[in-house]
Length: 180
Image 1 (cartoon, helix red, strand yellow):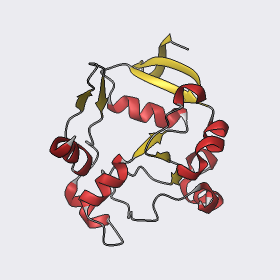
Image 2 (image 1 turned 90 degrees about the vertical axis):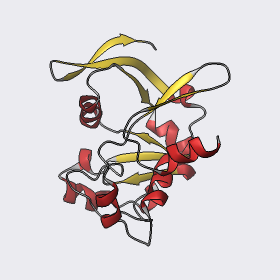
Image 3 (image 1 turned 60 degrees about the vertical axis):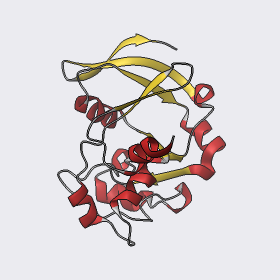
Image 4 (image 1 turned 180 degrees about the vertical axis):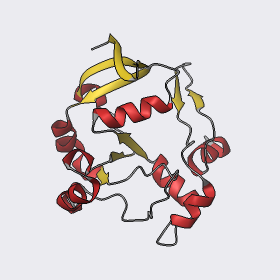
């Protein structure tokens, strides 16, 4: 709560942050190493400031849509295992469609390229130009880079079809334990 939360949500995190609730349960909030305040300021549109952009990012749950994107994320954090939830996307859309946005870029990355970003970076599926982005990005599997859900997915357990611990082994996302 308070100033600590405000700092976590509104500025660049150079390192992961561990949070703990009153029961002693903890979770990690990832760092934002691929971001640069300077590059972010230069690519923001619509009068947004870096602080406003960080708040926009931190009010969302981010889901990757392909194994290739998962591998990229895991390679960036290759020194530790990851809990990977595979979600029924159709059920997610049915239950949370009004809170879902799509984007054709990694909105939390400005390195090496700081693509323009602003209020229209997160679009509802009904407004997203899938065909256009397929052509621009090099195919259907690259047309959507991020699927986000505003605030939370409180029923994520009901939507999960498989949960596993994975770790990078020999350059691949190896399943080291299936939990569900």
